[in-house]
Length: 267
Length: 246
Image (cartoon, rainbow over all chains, first blue to last red; front, side):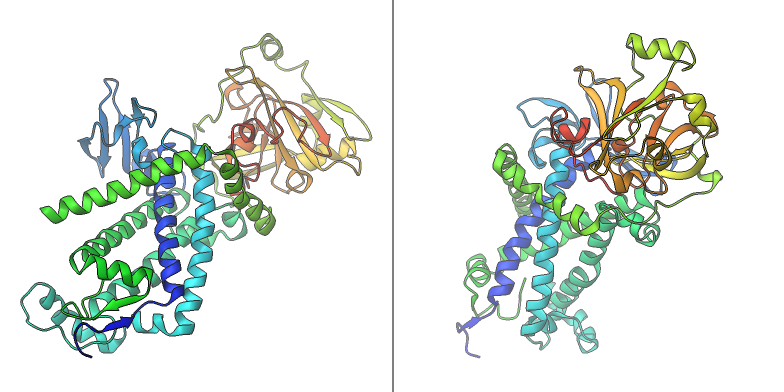
């Protein structure tokens, strides 16, 4: 391929589901934090058990936010525990109003949003998997044994310790590692822990809760997996930002991607 | 450093934009109603099947966390409480063949069932308790619901701080679920006032707010839409789902 050639990179299915995923992901985080606020602690147990508390976000009598992680306590006033009430004031609240849906405290509305966008995510995820496998896009994204020896050279290239990336297809080995983990490990676990907490699933099939260590533990895993996917999201947008924002965004909107100096360094 | 600032600010910008747009949409009645389709979908697809998980005696929380409101303070409840609930009668009326007024002694004489199950509060916490009582199905049979009856409404001897009466409803299928009890005892002791004495509903397959405390009257109805705000329960009228399976 000659440099500066425009290629058709993303199918309509990939592009549409990408932006629906993006919106649903934000709505699920914001409404999920709203739900967390109603019981702002996470226990590594089936029933609630303060002795097995991993995280709690609380406030003190004198309006200080206090976050405790594995027994270590931090002052987090203004950010966690005490801060924006979503209505122009400040109050005792685990996650502040500017980050939750709705901004004001409402568990009922948070659940309404969360259960709705869980469905959006599910339908979109199924559409993505069908479209991706049918068109062969996903096969190009899945890590294969042949990619494994190329992971280290690719990392060295990213760290500027190597001049050229190892030869690879549409996606480089590190992209494949990241997407394979997200699409086939972290996202499914996030969905399963969500289902463990979803209406009727526990009664229909106890193992869905039991394998995660029980109901409260499933709530903890669900939260941790959210953090993992936020980590992926941040890495993703930082790469978009540094690898040609315009070109990257265009390829996810119109499908067209200009191959050039950044050929092969995808996001 | 620049990159970290960029990352943190882009995530904050995305989430805060999401929060403010989300709040506006949330306040829009049409959109808010539209979000409710997920409840209808879950109710239609999943329904109420299966059994709540049962636990061992050693799993029980000795001090079972109190859910919902504090003990009713009104004269009617206090009088019953002071009389050790001797004057308590569980009324069963509405779409039934035989209206009933059942005493606590009668309930205690009926076949008892107990289960050790987990109570999951909609807020997110869980507690395990041993509940003993009569199956709601058996109590309904005493009154013989008419064919027109579709929902079992539980009216409680309790009001919210704003003065709204507490009530809940189940469909007949949920009411006749083998684990659905009118509980009389918790952890081998008669219910105390804070846990719903003398009679509370215990539905381990549904979120805690469904398990109404201080049940005084059971009304069978064809529809709950003309009761109070029409959503089938005190918390449902505040925006929580009627379908609250676990």
